[in-house]
Image 1 (cartoon, rainbow, N blue to C red):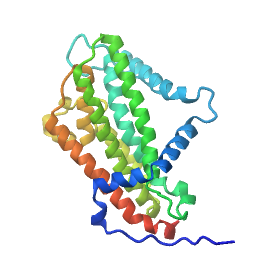
Image 2: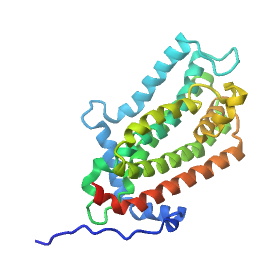
Image 3: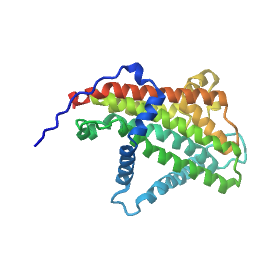
Image 4: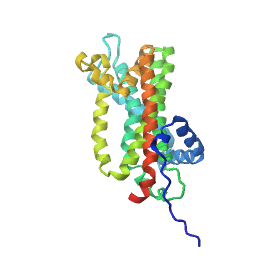
Length: 285
């Protein structure tokens, strides 16, 4: 019987990995493997449940109802000074922020153990490990998309208005996905060598949630501290998504362009770091 021996990959210079076209071409070349893993992860999430994929819609719907009751009905929260704002509007504003944040937050939470939990593939000859973070992020993107569509449907039901600026939710969601993907690539690679990474990432994710304008509008932050929130690209995207869907405000395209460029840079850097560290995975696991 022939024996397959794992051989170290030839390390690619880091500078050559810093190329968006190279990244896109790599994922396109492994699209069949990526499609199989996305399908596997999606079905694994709901396998064995009675309602199956219906939970993808029911879970955010239950969370939105809970937010409306607790934050709108009990705490009487307000996002604006508009006297016509209802508790449901406040809950909806929070849920928009949470839908976007969860794409990044869930990716950060699962990334450090992603390669370790799939260690069987590490020594498989020529297996594209870089598809594992992509598959995980796609699952969070699906949840984000369902959450945002649900927010749009609820807003239409409450107010009967569809603002043209709502179309900006798509590029904003893409930016969040790219940011999540870059962080996931980097943390999944670091998690192989530094096993404390999950313990470090957990508290950071919690702090990031409170810094990302999920529970409050940016303009409610004291002026002296507002810059600290505005340097967080996720906070900017959440604020602009909320303004587009609920108030019909077109985003500040200069800020959105800067955030989009930063998201692409994070994705490319994360991919380059993963691919640079990938040849050493087998020596550690």
